[in-house]
Image (cartoon, rainbow, N blue to C red; front, side):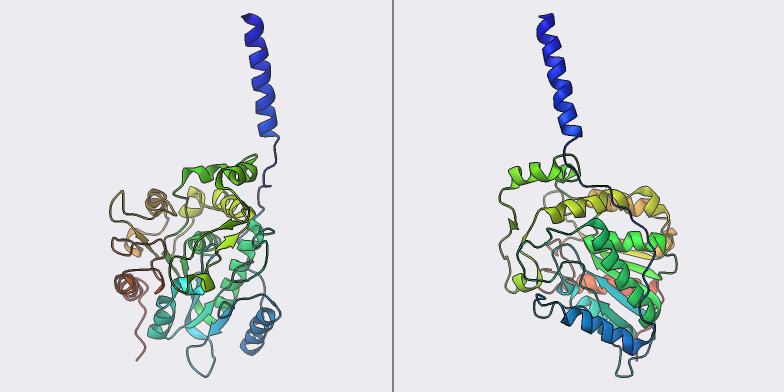
Length: 333
């Protein structure tokens, strides 16, 4: 019996060693420093358009772009930067980001994050946490050139990046984030950035790349429906590194958080609502400058898109109330 337990113990130690020493993503090295972009607005727009036009695989209407408040193409008092979520595009926030910018006379930058909005084989195979965050930081840097004060509007993984960038850049004026990815709803995702995470996911989920059906007409053009699981590993790595109490307490700016929740059965099944609520309580933002709204009738993780949300009007109304009551924006006459 003693010999059996000795063999069992040795085997257990060996198995633990194999697990711990197994393949895992390297911890990302991140910072909030924004890159340099052209200060001349004409050159800036040319650079944005040139970089997008040189990418041969961008799907129609997925390209990054500046939407100017008027034909003068001048810097506005406020700019809006929209950061979309993982496997999504700018349509994830339409029409609310467009309507918001028009209502308050803001220049708007619609970002296309790293490896998104393209139609190629093996999408997200080379995506890393660093690359994804770098593309979001560049978007915010562009926002700072086209507006005196920057408001970041974002959904899901875009909201996660918005929170981190705001925690490192106190001059960001405010955040409007929908269904932010603080953590995943599915607890299985906790394994993704652990040893053997990718390999376990491949066995559990199935074929790689991951494929999802198109649920609503037009969704396939603006969401990536087939991608490599390496992208999810990179995303989980970014979440684990950035979505911490330290990040949240460093945020002092006004924050609006909206998400889908009706009851335990009818709620967001992509991101964790409990994690969103916990994050909101940890924000360093003064209580009178932050607002949290649950939308029971949107019936989707994506609450600000005409393609997916079933209660756009409520989401837009609450967003405008925050803009006027908390951010003190004036409606453009």
